[in-house]
Length: 370
Length: 243
Image (tube, each protein chain N blue to C red):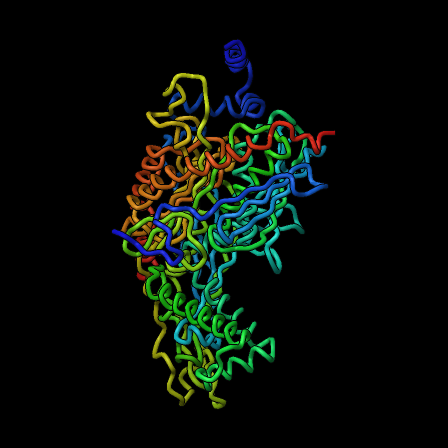
């Protein structure tokens, strides 16, 4: 009690900036008591958000997203690759998130920011949404490798395949059979998962010639200014870049390889292009996110970097356009999230989703008019 | 809605738990935690003097190092390190030893599903073994949602791959208190029903998530009992490492 009155006395004597630096927590709590935040926002309101498509001319799809001061630049580059045998008719997406030293005083040149790989992983989980498929594939690879690595095992597999009835008492045979069963079941699983996942992008759309050529989409997101809610801004820029993406025209060259047709020589080629014209990807159930800071009983939507550092409990909710929960992410923090808090955060995210959808649609329709 | 599990468990049944503490000689605290075939070894060194860069020197700092079973550390491991660090920070009393660093090293011995919850439980037991001041213990559980909408607990690797979605949840353990019941409630819910950490994979409806939460809470009470019994069984008279 005495300390409280002391600091509040001080607050009347001190300059506001000095009070803010010396007692950051009290400074924010004084605002919260009045249901307002230092930047004059109400607690549940997100900062002004804007999306601009086509910011990088050399990329196949790009977008610049701003939430308040937080700025993210996303660009997609398409390359033709040979698909793996397990997913012969699917393309691939590689997502990377970069935090250069320019974005924040915390990031030092020469050593990567701690947050960058974490956000990168979160983004690929949210956009691809079938993380487990990869581990299943790896597992089947491991099995096949294990079989191939030892000659004996390989031989016994051949035996098993050729004349399964005549080999009964051999241990090696049992082992290899077990491995075969395991790898078969994991392949099955990966098939199951890829059929059932409801990701934003259907990877089959990125296929060109089944088993021969498919698109590899490299999505790189650069954080230009890190002022809180990094994941929200990164996801928004990624989604916007995908909705701007135009898949280039490709054709077969004389060697029978798939090459990208550049604009100038496109008319001179006699060969039929593999895909007729530039096309857009079909995006289903687009994910949108909202990060909230929890402090005592207060929920602050879309925190700035200062708010994130003073009040440490973060909760990120990702919903897709049909209001399904894609992710509810709360990595620790001193405040516990009870059911009512979770429901409030989900409700805030629903509101935010409608705002973001509108902003994104406007950006896309602006682009089409130009 | 009954669901058959490959190992014959009921949906709510956890795999056999085992925990042994103080198994490493040089570490200040260590614990081996296993849930079925998933095994994790955690070691704690500290508190050591000084904090790392960008950490608040007025508080104790916790550093987590994740060692995978094989190979190099990648993005998923970095994420695990961050989640584990934030989770442990929220249960430690950080103001008791300001300007110190406590290192938690997590070595995966075998991964058969629910790896992160297992690592959190192991790290928590190791912190107790090292005598690091804690507010409360954390118990972690993995809940899975099948395609038919059933919730199953503590899946193994194959089950995890077949699921529509799964959730890792961390709760504080139930408190034994002399205070009358209900005095430590927050908004009509007991403290141990609040979530310390939540990580989800896959798409589900909000109601399904809340359902998972409910089942996770019920199971966390069992885990919390196990942890308490295990800690009490050899806490008095365990003077092998005193001094």
